[in-house]
Length: 384
Image 1: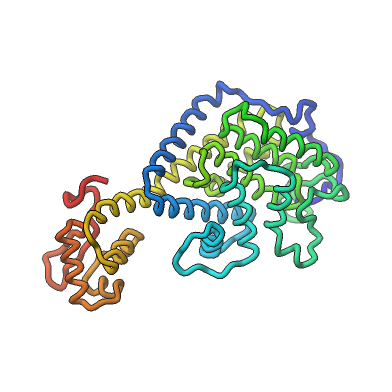
Image 2: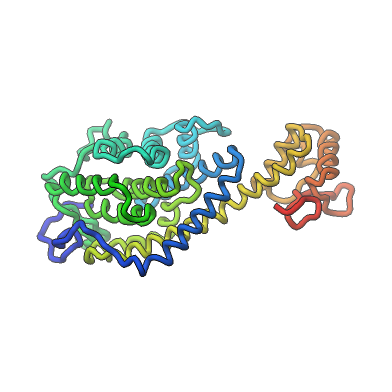
């Protein structure tokens, strides 16, 4: 983003007389909205049926993806294990081999968790300033010239969203002048916290576009705008648990995201096309989550079966390794290595699991015998 150096020669949505009275065609969106709401309800219903540990695992996975992908959209690459460890620390969850914390990672995680875990709390200018400060905590300690934790300074003027090399930039959007921001943000925040006159999912899409159009900060608007959308979606879901990642889907469709955003910001206050894209993208995010969470659900359901029997710690550890994507098939020697026991102990454990229908024997027997987990198609376990 760069200060605008010359007059705006094209009209942007915030220059229309009826801004910010955004409107859309409800009839055109109704079927798509109904489909997304149905998929959303179905996913949440499936997750409610899981035990607490599996729900926590799914939420941790989703939040990790959300933080990583939202930063990736802006060209910032975060370490997955650092993000996962930061989320676990801040949610007071126990995970294996946590990584040391980094201020840059902790800051963006703190913002995302505040948006989703405390979505029912009022969104205010002060809260947005805190989010912005969290994002740029490292720069703040280095004497950065960036205005951290405050609106864009008036001295900067209008901001341009550009791409391309210096001297050959393409201007995608010019934001309102900085002296408009206090009034613009007051209108936005009042609307965001007003009793819902529209479906909460639609509100998430409107809020994202509206906030990005105001562009109130020097930097970080994209990540904060997606956090606001996630906050609205958490309110729509009625739960702080996150099982789908809008940011991950946007990152996968980044080109279309920016093209649709640019068309809408260069268009009129009729944002039907933007909301149509937003709803479709959300639908794909939910569908992708269903596929990704199928493994978590299968794992939980399988443990329900396994827990009907008494399994020892060694067996539990090896079963979890198999469920988490163990490569190849299990042998006695591999079991012994995973469980840190003798081959004789490994063979006794395996025979117990085979007798209980938890493992299936492959091969004719002897030294070439291999084992795999019983799955839905096997008669050893009832369908999951």
